Amino acid sequence: MEDIKLHDKTFEVYIPETEIAEIVQHLAKQINIASISRPLFIAVLNGSFLFAADVMRKITIPNSEISFIKLASYQGTKSTGSVNELIGLSQDLENRNIIILEDIIDTGNTLEKIIELFQNKKIASFKTATLLYKPKAYKKDIPIDFIGKSIPNDFVVGYGLDYDEIGRNLPHIYKLKN
Ligand code: XMP
Ligand code: MG
Image 1: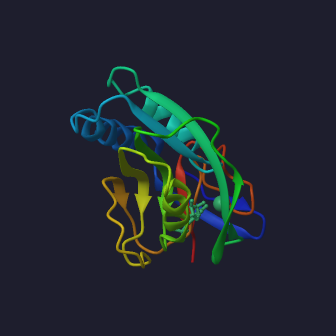
Image 2: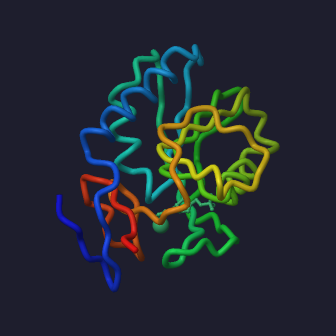
């Protein structure tokens, strides 16, 4: 498969779409067997839009719901450290079993901010599912319940992930070519 160019950088295929489908299927299976009752999945936009769409089609838990929040923490290829809530949640979270759907967890700053948003909301339980996880970059103690694939500290794009807003439509996941 061919390299691609986004803005000023070249990327090579890292996780082809066939492997992404297997990772998503496996992750959904883990969630399905965790016996979480009437879960409210909350996908973190924009990055998780494709992952959320694909994983939800594999969820077999009765009465599953999905909603969306939008945050921002990345400018270019480096995390800025601060995260701002852009679009909040409208529904009542009291007594709900929340499952966060993230495209990628890097430093954990975004996840920490999300957890803050759920404090004082009297939720029943909180779990996190992420397609990709960078263990070497992770700085928090918050447990991550469902992990699709752990990856090195490479910058990745495609399948929802962007480089300065482009590349989200790519069916494969690519990494920065050195
Ligand atoms: P933190 O550091 O808060 O980062 O855990 C999580 C958010 O940062 C974005 N992110 C990436 N986006 N390629 C991307 O396109 C990457 O390699 C990458 N690493 C982190 C992403 O939006 C995620 O929600
Ligand atoms: Mg981004």
